Image 1 (cartoon, rainbow, N blue to C red):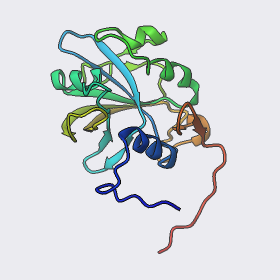
Image 2 (cartoon, rainbow, N blue to C red):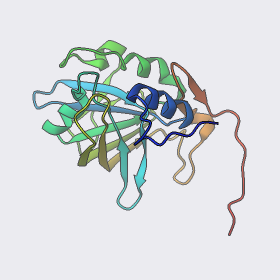
Image 3 (tube, rainbow, N blue to C red):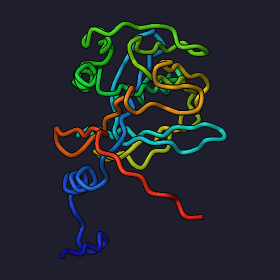
Length: 204
């Protein structure tokens, strides 16, 4: 067994990243589209992601600064056009989602790279992925920055203002896990399926 008091025995950011990714899992994946003021579109997946509020409906995801301490295109775009679409890809689009994790020069379009069609998202100027089964159209509430060193996080708080969802997945009350086939991010190159579930009754 090992104990680490980080003030006295600091771990490198790389070690903490591997520890987080290997233990805080499976992590849901936000597949986020944005665009800059010139209309150049970006699409990228982020597994530091979850729900942070229901009323109002707010999602949170956290792009890390790169190895040079520079923000990703998603953050730059949100600073110029404060809206985004957060997609839940499901297993059917995992290869396309993975393709959009490539490091492209600013201004290059990941939709085109992955062969994905763009369609309008109600209430926004940012497009959504036409084939995505679930899309949450969001307006930026806040970006919380945790520093300017490499691998510092930028927590994006995005309020949901419109929703697109496949009728085969949502009946107005319940989501069909079998139809959505959600996936989770593990460590390294690994992903997880949700095909082995168990239930527990919540205590009163």
